Amino acid sequence: MAEDRRTTDSARSPLDVVRERGGRAVAEVRQRGAQAGRLRLRQLEVTLMIALQAGLAAALAALLAQQLLGAGPHVFAPAAAVGTIAAAIGQRAQRTLELLIGVALGIVTGDVLLYWLGFGPWQTGLVVCLAIAAALLVAGRSGSLVGQAGGTAVLIATLSPSERNLEVPRILDALVGSAVGLLVVALLVPINPIRVLDRATAPIFTQLTELLHEVARGLTQRDADRVVRALERLRGLDADIGRLNESLSGAEEVVTVAPVRWRRRQDFHRYARSAQHLERLVLGSRALARRSATLIQYGEPVPAHLPDAVARLGDAVRELRRECQGGGSLERIRRLVLEAAELAGRAWADGVGSFGDTVVTDLRTAASDLLRSVGCEPDEANRLVRRAAGAGEFAGRPPARGRMERRAAAPTRSRRARRTHRQRGRRRAGLPERGRPAR
Image (cartoon, rainbow, N blue to C red; front, side, top):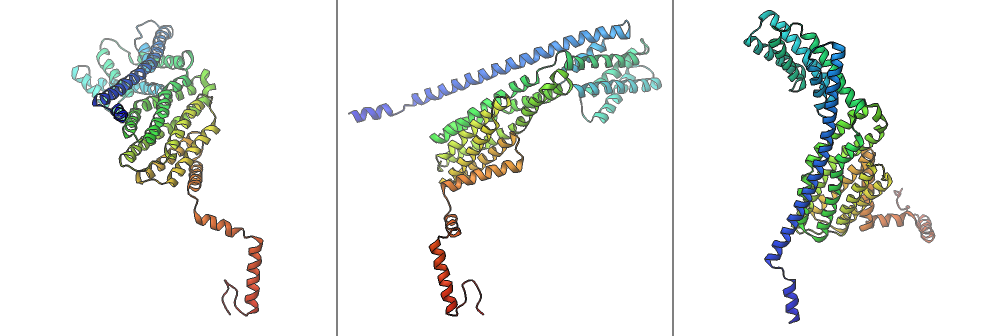
């Protein structure tokens, strides 16, 4: 009777399964909601900074244009300043140059054609068409240059009959507005590049560390569904990778043009070095999770050292995050990475199937990427990982030939004496020595 009670208590009803799945779904929704909230908060801070820069740049551009260029509306000076600020972070200097070239192309095209064709609706359309075509030939793509060329051509074609000499004021307004926009970005209100990079990399490092440990737990429990859920979340890091690339571009721009941020160049290069391999590491972790799930689904063996290697890789990613913030240890990262490679070698020596073999290969590739992210050259990183994995393989299954060679390489004194005695006996008997041809 007690046996029946234990069986009944341990059995899981369909309602229990539904409740468990519902709980996991609710937890996942809460986690994604929290991540989305943190992302919106970071975006709000960047938005407020750009809005502050744009408002200050517009006010200064309008003031300088009135002081330097005389009375007048000078609408384009603040517009050019705002256009410079609103350009994608990391591309402001390039967009400013495109803006000036586009204005020049629009003025030249409009003046030349209108001088020969006169003014009118169809002349306006032809001028804009040719100005944009010329801008596309110069830039090779659509963008700020093309938009400014077309907009300037429209202004020249429509306002020239009523207002003369628009060309020089428009060029001067563009120069003043662009210069003010760059001044605000570089000197007055420069963003903190390291803070931007830290907030861009935080979700990637956190998620990658957590999900590698989740894959390790799934391998330990042979829970393929758990590994698949981790894989789906790894696939959701693409947007974070895109934001990281934009932040890297913006931070590089700031540490290049803003004198007050030049002292952060070393910190920026440390982040850039790690982020360069972070995307590759995410892709490698996806492959690792996918093949781990397949390994479990096909019923292949999971050596005890395999989940330990995956978990150690997650620990190395966490330590890399601390190193980017200036509080980690490069030596500890290398030690964790090489431990992961050695455990992968031990797992292979314990015996794996075809998919388990690919998981070991993915672990070694990810370990090499992590070493490269902390400054190792590719050949050196591959050599260190290969040596650590080889040590793990040897520790798990040392080859018999290696033991024989070690014993043969260091013969004992009695063995050497017996060998010398046999050689003397063969010489006295007139027999050739072993290893030499008979004469």
